[in-house]
Length: 473
Image (cartoon, rainbow, N blue to C red):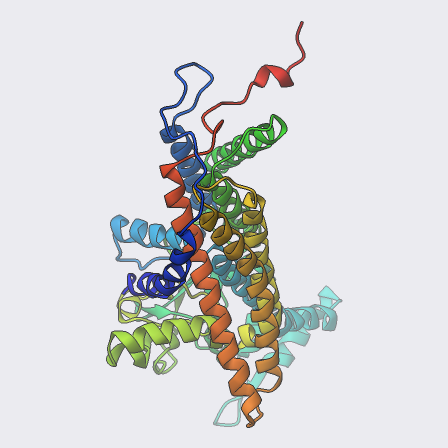
């Protein structure tokens, strides 16, 4: 299933490449330095370039990716494989990872606000109603004394008041933790399913579960993010960028792979900033126990398998594509249900995503344009033929311009969503065309980067003369 999204861009790329082949006839080919690198200490081999880019990409994506909480019974191999899969998405389409992180951040913010409004107001009301500690006990007893069925009064604390008194206030970190699968419902001391924040809020208000008492420091303590991995990623990225700047100052060329690495590293850095408050590599959720006095809950949200998984691979691929890019709804797979975890690329609320759809589109499209703008720095790169340079320029400009088109067309379709005229269908068709052009342009850049290894421009193997930047006699 994971190979199908990669096969579609490759198939779309075939006519784009074939259309450019006739332009090779009669085109003069520039002679490039394709021999071995100079045999001196001031030379770098092609393997050195590939290794530097690979180390930078791995360090940046490994540090930036904040996966959701895995299933409690899943092994390390499954957890690491899922992380590597998300890292591949970040390498191939970093702007999609930014969009996903943005939806999670906005959802976490809305969830924190909703819990603070629901339970924080009750806590504030309780404290403001009983400022005098001498009278507080009597007042609270009178407030919570409720009649029993036989007409007598008995002491009983209502669920909202108890929840308000146990509430400690939620932050964005709490919102992230809740949506990444941080609260597991236990019924009769047996784990049943991960709770959505809305389900947790409803069950607390109904008195079926206790309000989880967990502060931000406790959540951060569960996070596995350490200063060493963060420092290694920052140092590797800083060293990589410093080398590129130094090569530019000394008029030394850079490879297209280094340029693409710079673009991906820039966007993964933005992703890391959006996920700054999200706990990283949490392995165990917080237990929420169902009260024995309450009746068992009905089917929960994360116990339902998406209907597309019963209709074949094409329906599954369409569901993933449509829900991720159009409706903003995560797809719940049978494996996720069996593992009692949130979807791998889920962790956000569909209602919140719809409310913030324009903001999410703006951030995602802006970063897509930034990605193309960085590739435009290779505008004058010396290719083996003029067709390669023309393709690189056209693809870079397409990646810059198509996000603008996607943003405008998506905004228009949202604005006329209730309209029944043909303009909505035309805009939707144009939107799909813009997506297709964007995908073809991205694949074109990848192919040109791989083809550029056959012939590198002169001076690419020369290293930076660092002594020119150090004052010396």
